[in-house]
Structure formats: structure tokens, C-alpha cells
Amino acid sequence: MEVIKRVGEMQEVSLNLKRLEKSIGLVPTMGCLHRGHLSLIEAARRENDIVIMSNFVNPLQFGPKEDLATYPRDPDRDNRLAESAGVNYVFAPSSGEMYPEKYNTYVEVEGPMVEKMCGKSRPGHFSGVTTVVLKLFLITQPDRAYFGQKDAQQAIIVRKMVTDLNVPIKIVTCPIVRDADGLALSSRNIYLSPKERKQALALPKALSAGKDMILKGETDPQSVRQLIIEVLESSPGIRIDYVEVVNGDNLEELQTIKGKVLLAAAIYVGKTRLIDNIDLEV
Amino acid sequence: MEVIKRVGEMQEVSLNLKRLEKSIGLVPTMGCLHRGHLSLIEAARRENDIVIMSNFVNPLQFGPKEDLATYPRDPDRDNRLAESAGVNYVFAPSSGEMYPEKYNTYVEVEGPMVEKMCGKSRPGHFSGVTTVVLKLFLITQPDRAYFGQKDAQQAIIVRKMVTDLNVPIKIVTCPIVRDADGLALSSRNIYLSPKERKQALALPKALSAGKDMILKGETDPQSVRQLIIEVLESSPGIRIDYVEVVNGDNLEELQTIKGKVLLAAAIYVGKTRLIDNIDLEV
Image 1 (cartoon, rainbow over the protein chains, first blue to last red):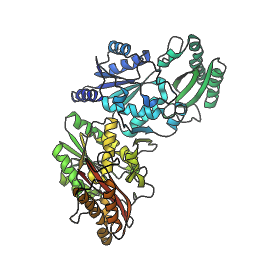
Image 2: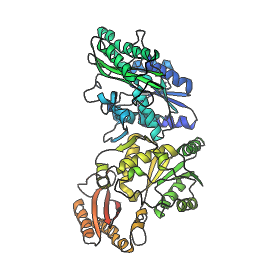
Image 3: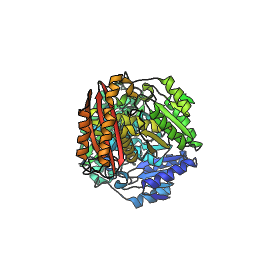
Image 4: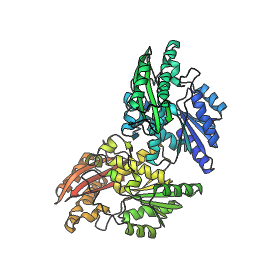
């Protein structure tokens, strides 16, 4: 496995691999790898000749009051895990390498898709995501790129950007990986105290309750949303950021529960913001 | 020569050409070809195996009060000229093909570079340009793309977008082509009455006077700008939109005339807006 820090070098390697007709799978990460990331790498290995994992904590997608400075970083551990998972290249640029002085170009998906849910609590976040993802695509030239369903809104917005801009890359979304207790894996889980960790379980529990309600025949999205809110509100130590029951392809409002449905929520446990979701086909 | 109207088909052809290791030169146009465009095609032919010319009047770069509806179109003539100039593929999509319903992704260079000069009189124009150009790049997969120096600000902004987003494409700028009387070729020249056409000659004349002033040793950008304004103001039938004497690489203000200098101006002759410029190395 090779670790590359320079944009120019990574792009040259990738363009050469394309010339050799190697298929490339990209797994974009912000490091601090967990089994969620490893499942993306595994999927990328199955479907491509070469796997590139990017490891870049993208400042552009953090708000001024967010956790950019404290976001967990452990590049040596990441590289060891990536290597044993079969990654061929880790692309780990500095911020200055990705955004040199006078950097001034942004890629934005507009509209409700980016304004609701995480876009509401994190203004500018998705513009940072689409900008860095397009840069990573152009630098690493993948045939396929792998995103976790955990960040469902992100995956939907990246897919929209790729469709709108005619980027010839297939976006693959992989299922959420959970700990034994049901909590979705996230690099931010390490912020949680043991007590908060237990309180956080209300999030998967509430979403599961919503899913069960649908499986039992409920067709009104507002009733499902209300149930999720009630479960969360009756749980100690947490604060709701949002709860949504929406179309799982485009996040649009649903009149009735039908087709691809996404139950998504974000909560605060102490100072830590956690997101989770369940998607199902009805 | 083949004329392709579908995004998917054009992209498939281009990706196949890349697999065959053919180099591709893209000449983006809005049709209504003149010798300026033909000089771009000629440069593209010299440097690439395959030349793709796009012919798309991009609605996104026209303001609500601009000439989108009346912009001259003659695709049959364009195709004949392109074929005899040696173009291999004309990509001529419809608006709906480029911007389907619910299209919502935009690429923007921010900062003074897009806010001054044409960006001031045409708000949103350059966002439309960078968005369509990136789409065309991703659809046609060129190694090199050819732009006319006539639209100097556009070429600089496209170059900035390509640098910032790490697009692996070389931007080539080709010199302005002028008619015998000195007027820079433009598809919009056909809007001019014979009388207006004569009045329009004040534009190249004023810029030439500015250049001569520099060649004679003037080093103060404001004096050069003032001279250009005076020549234009003393000419009948025209109205100044802007006159700038700036850094020819990034359009920044100059303290003194040195290095790459751009003398640029936009005027109205009747209802027709014309731009022109002279760049020189001092």
C-alpha cells in the first residue's frame, strides 16, 4: 500500500491506472476508521481492480462552531487498518494541498434537498461536501465511489451532483454498520461518555419503533414521525435536532408511506451530535 | 463528422476514445461560427487526435433581460463549417438534455475575478459559464480545451475553476481574430447596423491607443485607463460599460504597468453590447 500526500502525484497515479484500463474504487473518508469504513473498502475491493481510500478531514464542511479542531485523527492506525483491508493507495493530503491560498471554487447542489435535515443545522456543510467530493473524484478518477448509508442525505446529494454534472462515476451506497447494542458506527461516538453512550441508544430505538409502525401497516408519515419524536422525548439526556420521514431517493415530503422511505433523525447527547436513519421499501 | 445530440451518447463515445488512448481537443461554442471559432478548431486539430466541438447556446449564462431568445443560431451552417474545418464530432444538445427538470447543481468561482468587468454588468453569467463548461468537460473528456482570448475574463475564470477543482485538462487560449477594419469577431456583430458597425470601431481604436501609450513608456494604469475612456467618450453612438487595465493572469488591480497586462473594455452600440481587449507582456 502506498500513502500519497500530493494532489499532483495522486492524479498522475490515477490517470496512469486508467490508461492501463484498471478499474478504480474510491472510498472517501475523514479517517478514524471503524467497521463502517471497512465495509466500504470491502465493497470497493469486490468490484474494482484498485482501491483508493482518501483520508482528509475536510475543513470546508465544518461550520465555524463545529468540531473541526477536535475531530479524531489517527493516520497511522488508519493506514494500518486500510492496508490490512486491502487498500492499494491512501490519499491523505493536507488542507493547504486541497485548498491552496486564493482557492475560490465551490460546487453546490441547491434546493430543499440541501436545506433540510442536516443542511438546516449545518449551513454550508453540503456545499463543503460536494466541493471536496468532486475534487476527490477528479484527482482519483474512480469508476465507482462508496458512501455509507449512515450519511443518507450526503449520499443522496452526492448522487444528485453526479447526475447533474454528468460525472461518469457510479455512486454505491453501503448499509449502516451498527455495534452490538444497535448504535450506528460513527467516528464521533468516541466523544460519548459511557453514560451518554447508553442514552444515545434512544436514537436507533426510536427509528426502529418507527419502522415497526410502518411494517404493521401505518401509512401516514406524520404519525410515524410523531412516534419517533415521542420515543426520543421520553428518553433522558438527549435533545432532538430533527426527525424526518421522507422519500428515500430525494428527501421530498411524502403524502403517504409508499416506495422508498427514509426515517432519519439527528440528536444531541451532551455536546455530541449524532445522526442515524433507517431506509425501507414499502 | 458525426453530430451527437444526447449527453449519454457523447460521453460514451468520449470515454471509448480515451480507452483507445486518443487525445481529445474540445472547442466549446455557442454556434454561429466565425473565423475566431475556426482558429480554435485549427489549434485543436494540430494538438489532438480527435476534435469535438460543442454547439450549445447555454441559457444559464444569459441574464433575464439578455439576448437568449434572439441569439443567432444556424446549426446547419455551423455543421458545414465544422466539418470542413476538420471537426470529428459536433456535440449539440438541447437545453432539456443539459438541464433536465429538477436540475440544481452549480459550479461557482467566487471573488473579485467574477464580480468585476462582465461579472458586474452580467450577474450570474460566469456561474452559468463555469457550470456548463465543467459539464462539457465531464461529457467530452478532453485533454485540452480551447477558448478565445476575446472573452479574456471567461478564459481566466475557467482556468481558475480547472486549477481549483483539479480538473486534469489543459486550457488553451487562442488570440483574438479581427476583421480587416479591426473589429474583433463576435457572433453578436451581426446585430450591428452598418452605421453602428462603424461606430463600434472606437472600441479597438481606444484599446490600441492604450497599448501605444504603454509601448511609449507609460507605467500608470489609471492614465492608460483614462486615455481609453477619453477615446471612447469622444466617439459618437457608443456608451461605456467598463474600461479596465488589470493583471492579465488574475484581473487584479495593478499598482504599475508590469508583467502580463490586460486592457479590457465593454461598450454598448445601440442595444448591442460588445467586448474587446488587448493583452501584452511589459
